[in-house]
Length: 142
Image (cartoon, rainbow, N blue to C red; front, side, top):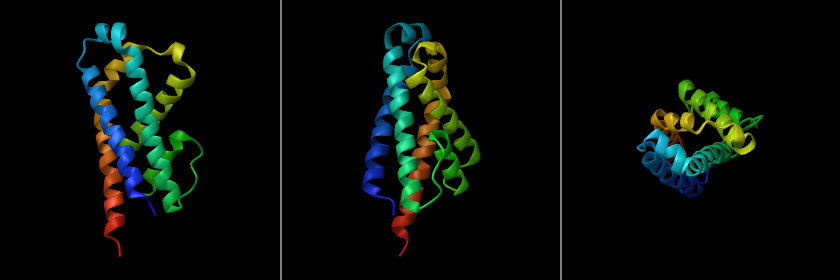
């Protein structure tokens, strides 16, 4: 069974990261790249990792198939009706960006990361809502 307290704690952290990224999104791209790119990279990385950690907790708790990698965790949630296909695809891309931030950090185009914050933050909200629905549905089951 999903541990609702753990999920709520992780979703709370994700919400905090999302709010900080929203502040960075409002910056002009040049100023962001010059002054806040490393903060933005870190916040994107930990936001992605929070989503991955939540996904893996849900998957393990529900006894669903073991994901092959971080990206596949969102596929497993999609297969089990937790995520809509379009959202799952964007979260798989986020997992890929997380991997690039961690392993290929010297190749990151910070202006591209900044521009991605425009639409990407809504995905954190949609992911949080989908997981919250799952947790609430479980709590309502006898």
